[in-house]
Image (cartoon, rainbow, N blue to C red; front, side, top):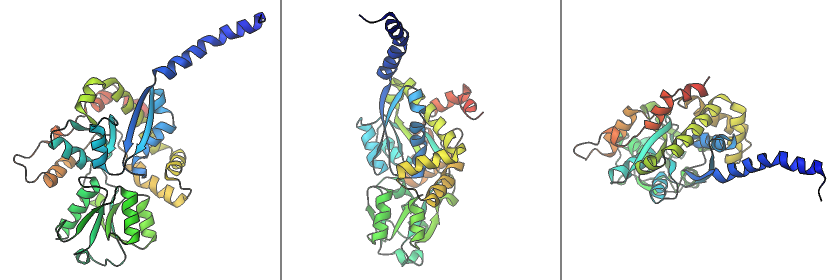
Amino acid sequence: MLPKFLWLLILLCLPSVVAAGQAAVSATPMRFLYPTLSGTFAASWIAKEAGYYAAEGLDIELIRVGGSSRIVGAMLGGTAPIIHAGAPASMAATAAGSDSVIIGCMSIVSPFHLMARPEIKQPSDLKGKKAGISAFGSSSDFLVRLALRKFGLEPGKDVALLPTGGESEAFAALQAGSVHIAALAYPSYVHAQRLEMKELVNFSELGEAVHAALVSTRSYLAQNRDTATRFTRALIRGMHRYRTDREFSKRILGKYLRSNDDQILEASWKDVAPNLLKVPRPSVKAIQFIIDGQFKDKTPLPKPESFVDTSILDQLERSGFIDSVYK
């Protein structure tokens, strides 16, 4: 028989053990997909590592899937309910009849730079060459096509488009000489600079963007609004931490990028963190810009609101939640 003091100790500890067990059981499992290992998508890493998802009762599994078109397809196939993807890929799926919808974005400043191999001295040298994109319909596809047309070159005719699977793979193809240009962000952009590759376009100078779009489906939002709201709250906390805690953010960047190169980590933080939105609402102007470029042959042109649902963000802003995070 156990001594009395041991029975007392067990009785005192039992409520905590039960509560912990209930918390573990009640955590909602969720997969979250993102397209590439870049500081662009680090807010979700930070939200996980800082415990913000767990605090919202979510057990998040972060999975990298190269190429926004593939990620949107995976979401529509039921692999994950909410994803990071390029806005053009989500909008193409919506226009094709799916219920894919953009519910937020990290920034309205594009982090991409069109980088060319050293032998490309000027845009006209690209004729007959190859451009690396992550996938057809991806953000990189949209941006490369946009740049080529600005240079007076026809994508697919004057310059071949080669899908590589992701930004890291596009940089590897650029380095190997398999392609001659690619749209790169940090840290690939820094690596390209170190190899004396030439910057042809800084896409941040072309106007507002829908950068690192947060995408779901209208059916998921209708059936799981509470879960989607909890996810969004945690991500907003991650964005705030990214913006305001440089050293913690750099540690998480180093972990996921598998790098201890402080120059890369510092540059990645500086390029992304200051541009993160307090209220991660997509720019209507930027959505319209994509519509004008991507759906120019459609009559009538689709309206921006057919691609976007910011009702969760609107609710969080009205409730004072976002202001409370930034106090």
